[in-house]
Length: 179
Image (cartoon, rainbow, N blue to C red; front, side):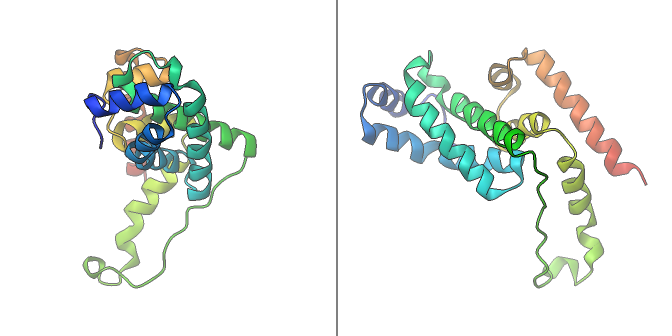
């Protein structure tokens, strides 16, 4: 993951705000993968995730000048992408299907499909969460945001963010331990 405090990235933001497309391309290259990962967790659909990230880049290009602290570029970009992913889900109002590969068994599960039940249970429990809750969990555990960054991205306080994460994790634990 790219750190927000890199001086070259701060310089790239300054240049991109001035209209430098090469500097903006550098920003895209540095942050596109993180944004896509977070959007995929929210949407559970790679095509929707890609669409959300593309929309986020368009917004970022237009609004980069409003970024008050260039050192917070990464968290700002991921938050924009997460918002776009949630909006796409709301607009499409569709339920995604999680594809499960039925290819060759992995060596450690020795052909026993029961070895994947925990993964399937987690995927099903995660799919039942709202897009906002999936966004919060993905920004924390996929993008690695701390509670302060999450709070800024979601409009919550750091302590409120930690409390919400704790409730979500407890909900997932409860769903996964119920028989």
